[in-house]
Image (cartoon, rainbow, N blue to C red; front, side, top):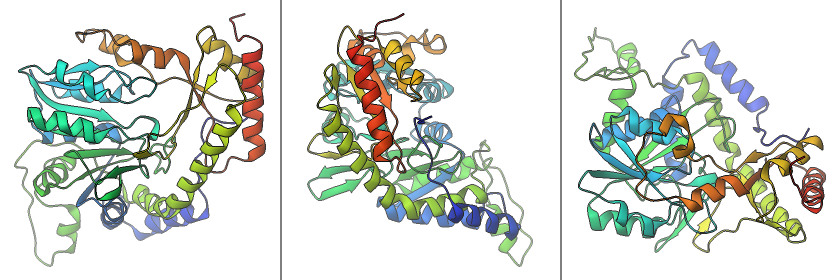
Length: 384
């Protein structure tokens, strides 16, 4: 079976976890602090705060920007449902806008028409590892005085060209960026997340809230030669990352350049192979973006049945996934008002197929995927 994704884990991660376990400090502690510092250096962020997963990161980012009941947050429906859920958990309402033509990220031209007196923030998603057009997004955000959260769950290692040169996603162009370390992502800690920001006040809030609103972190109390009593000035959450996870994350960070290089080479090879497959459109990078190719999403021509194509692949031992979900089509978010139709989002969900891609993928495996896809398309890929 050729899997849709496969984390690259080995002896380095096993030894790192072992050392954390044997250290006696397995909850949030020194390994988390080291992971945060290394992640900040890698992304160029001023501050990085580790949390339990990217959904909790999104929740803290929204709360940190003051999002609450009655507010509206402009975002895309075309994303994993966690973003919409996090907005609702703040008591706010998502306002869904459509994605760009031919791509998977927010259409910057759709933002301004969606702004109302209740708009308080934008939440943009760097979908499947392809950066958003942040220059265009920020022009709209600045014109209307709206803060910007970057859902960078899929985008570690991706880059955006700025007037100063290529900038890693995570040195936020917006106000906060949120990352995931789920096993489907480019690097993993099993579960886990990270917030990056240039704002020290925001970073301080994230650190306070992730640990129950506790005034003193455990590391400070345990290191002190005096008895210290903590206080709880604000209500918080248990959104902590463990030291075991962070130790694995540190080992994963050392692999990141090689992982990104491998994924980019595989994506280029996919593009060359798929050029000969009619009815299938390969993804392409704009000249201002470098994807990390967290997922490889192809588009099927009209008339090809997505489910039938995927079943044909599965019958040949190849896993795939349908296009990114649309939150507004799910029962959990069906009560969200939809001011405008989202035809591009729905078409992307229904006509895109994610093909297997992982750093260890061989050329032989890639050839099998393309051959199976070509056979499915040639057969018409219509429902049985």
